[in-house]
Length: 274
Ligand SMILES: [Zn+2]
Image (tube, rainbow, N blue to C red; front, side, top):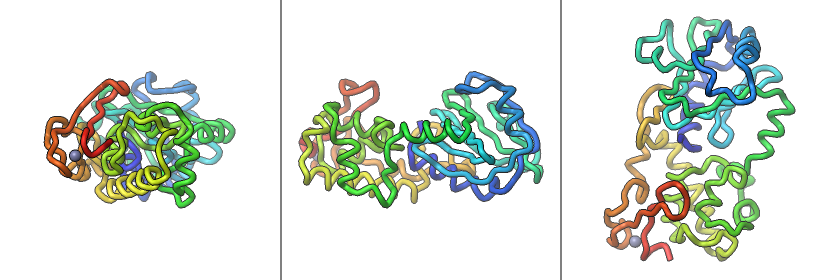
């Protein structure tokens, strides 16, 4: 699923087009993406409301409409885009939510496999939702100490801890693999057993890689598209993800791939990540 850099890119791309616009009307093609809200409540709530803000939190795009929040978590095949005029056949085919804006453009959430989710929250609901998610790794307040306090208290493997959204926001399988490789840390290590020097390195590399990936407009390894429909570029800079069996860029050892740690593929170098 899109991680922090991908959702950040989508949000930055469509933000100028939707900010200050009012939703004239909205339609929904399928209800299976809805969480805790009915079609009727969502569509009636959207109609007539102004989009006051749009920002990213963790892997979600959060639309602020008065005292409500529309929270979109794009799944593996989800995308947000703003279309001029009528949708073409391809755009219309998988359009799940369409919100016609007061300037005639349409904000579309499209999702081929409908693995994404839509939430419609009031202020209290949002506060509760937001509080259950860990700190943002690119925030200024996210120091080494903050990272250690958030991620370093668990017996879980450091890789699982990095990907646990309750502990840390926005990092998924791609960037957890990359950060651990760059920091030279074995993904299976118990998070609470990392040394001070390892936290310093992991903190620095996590932030460096996420920032570079935002600059590169995310990683298109499958279906991810930016808010303008293009591909990201950062997949070209990935050093371990998707490269199992290929030589390690640092030492030449073939990279190992395993599913033993969690349900996702973990790719690492036995030699560099001790
Ligand atoms: Zn190596």
